[in-house]
Image 1 (cartoon, rainbow, N blue to C red):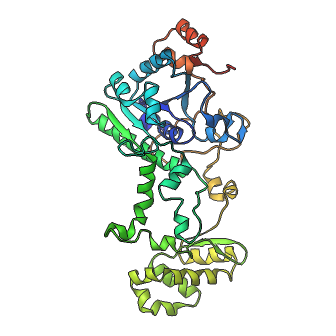
Image 2: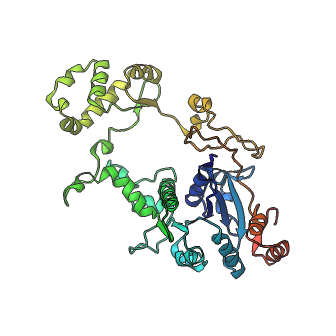
Length: 399
């Protein structure tokens, strides 16, 4: 954790990945994050695989936070959240807009309580369009945004990427929007700031950044970035495994073609011109693939590295656990204070030189800070006990 956002108070009402990922990144930069959960808790707490401290997915997205478990369907719960809003700078959630309204945490309600609040809703679909009320999960957004259909453009069947990419990309957009709003606030911006980070629009912009292609210029222009859609752009077999190789510039292709004794291609007219070379990219990739099969992966890594041609062996996620570079930087180190059963944790991967870091805190139990948070809001012990007895809040250790 680095104390860049020290003093910034954030309410996170998030579940699974999208909301908690935003909260964790803000927490890693020193903001005080209060994660608000229903009494049963974020479902990621119970996701398989389970171990010390809960589910792995929960542990990867909830460090450096304080935990409040409360029933927002109850008037007493809404009254408690209102007190918390009064002393917060940022209010963030990733639920559907109508659900937020029913719980009394829509923008109008929250901004009436705290007139200078930064309010961010990371939702499935933008509220100005006809899809605004649709439910959204990562697979649904991968389908709707065209991401799952990319593989069909390469001649295969539609496929989902085996990672929760829509949640994480939307989270990054929500994060930069919140940070920009905090800068505006520091420079004197008055009044509430409402941020909407819709997964569908975010992923559509993310995907079409390169794939809008010819449609940028004409209604009938071809969509799709040709090099990325070439069926020959793929991992390639070597004599004993797999490798990724990407000669990208003219000079890199010349060095590669020289390595495989095909420098004659460099004299072709189509090779000299970047546009026509791009049109022949499939031919170049096929030649590359056929050549790679003749040597081992290690031999190619050595040769291509000497030529300064981008390359990498194909690693599996499991192999990353023993990656020598990650080992040297202590990537998977477990901070002090984590449960004994945790063998690895994921760090904040961004390095801030010149800022003294603070120790990370492990993801905490459901309701671990409920009593302390309400005490900060002015509740005395008797009032807190009443809320516990009435089943409005939950503290750690309750059944």
